Length: 249
Image (cartoon, rainbow, N blue to C red):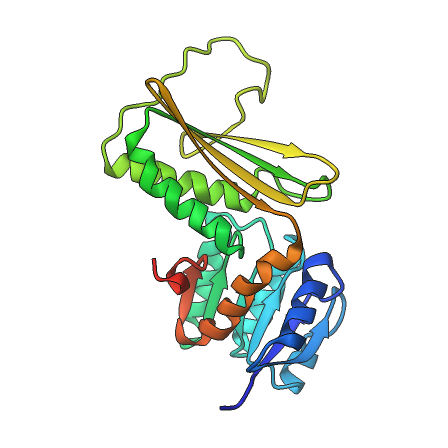
């Protein structure tokens, strides 16, 4: 079987450089092109890139994806800042290039994806739920994409189960004291030097609390999920959100 030819956009960044190292050590994958902001995307086409991994910046990612998808290159996206409008735009781009796949994942950590799945299962059984995400202070978005997605799946599970509205008697609060609401779920963001990527989902019921927590202590923890997505994206035309489907759920 021929190796999949892979290119990395944002190769000089913290995550991009880690992806390059992982690709160079992986079986069945060949890193044929790497570039950073300002480098010509034509290099990817000339190198025969089949799958591009994007870890860049919210300000440039959409323009990059537009060129890659139009060129028939599958994309695996770890860049943050994807809201509903951006996802809809990406779906439009993919519709113009049938057969091209895009996986956009708020988190490539297997443990983080499992945490989201466990939170979805637990959500209907508890009266209250709040999310705390903790990251390094160089992160540009808050709350994190992982926390937003966790809140969405928790809220959807509660809606499907016809859960009652969560109790909260707060009538006076400083701005932001109760976090941001994502589909009605409070999400709190911490930015602290020394952290990498961490998330807690707190469930509360009468007389008990369930805490789900995931800690990424090194960026290498995301690489198994990235490689899984690189190997699987060509088999999933159109838009795939997260790597849960690649894990079987």
